[in-house]
Amino acid sequence: MKMLNLSPLDPDFVQDPYAAYARARRDGPVLFWQDYGMLAAFDAATVQALLRDRRLGREVPEGMRKPYPAHLSDWGKVEAHSMLELEPPRHTRLRGLVLRAFTSRRIAGLKPDIEQVTADLLATLPSDPFDLIPAFCAQLPVRIIARLLGVPEDMWRDLLQWSNTMVAMYQAGRSRAIEDAANQASRDFTTFLRGYIDQRRNDPRDDLITHLIAAEEDGEKLSTDELIGTCILLLNAGHEATVHSLGNAVKCLLDHRTPLALLNPDHIATTVEELLRFDPPLHMFTRFAYEDIALGDVALEKGDEIALMLGAAGRDPAVFENPDTFDPTRPAKPHAAFGGGLHFCVGAPLARLELQIALPALFAHLPNMTLAEVPRYANAYHFHKLDQLVIQP
Image (cartoon, rainbow, N blue to C red):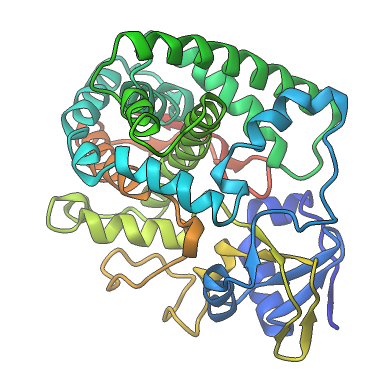
């Protein structure tokens, strides 16, 4: 078995993981990543196949589950009801109920909200150099998620803080301080949602929480704990990915001096798909093997965990010609930025809609925008996100 010795905290890797992915594909494409203690697949064919292979899943296999330590008890209660960490039949039930409420019609109906929030944020941007991430990229998706769920939009700062604190748990090299903060955020978020869900039971509105409650009362039970886990997942997964998709996209468009014509209505959908392929925000997604699986000359044994390298799959030359070239005119092909299989991101249509609205509006508002500082990626792998994006309007 070929080995990969590469720290995810290495500064060069953090700034440009794609060169390392290319080497790994040539050496593997499935290697044992020593720093993670698991196999990792770097080519698109293996990644796409394993995302859809029902012999693997997210849920920890029987006999390997360990209770969360006391200092992560509140975090563990949320994770226990997150469909991201579950498999059928429970995952099927939860996802079906969510999709029954999180319909394409509801997502399309958010277009005026996205346009309004985008316009409101653009109107407040300063004229001097500023960091676009907190001023625009972070606020847009969290405000839209608040409107979608039906919680007060002026709570966006709390929602953002809870989300950022909890998502830090998935980063390489997490510390006890990160764990303690995530547990407190889980407790605070859960307390808020439990009270808010109780309010919505007595005062239903046209929002996602009300529709999830209705689904619970429609014969297929969705418990309050499952409602809480679902709402937290929608915020954390949806918000985190869109924030950094926006940041990475703006950097990419500025780096390549992309013609504004490629952001017009005829081209924006294709441009967004290329942006997601070229520099996605999530680079690794893991699966457990539920039986022995042969991957060429590599054996994945029952109980093993394997890393599916989503960021590497999008740069595979076997699928994408000149994959390290950003080409917004490239005919769109399936990529792995939103995962795949049973765990394909339920928020993908919303994320695409936000990008397709926000990017043209931003560049129309600031047509002479340039980078005021060299952007740096955060030491937050397996997320690939910018520490800051300082622009000159």
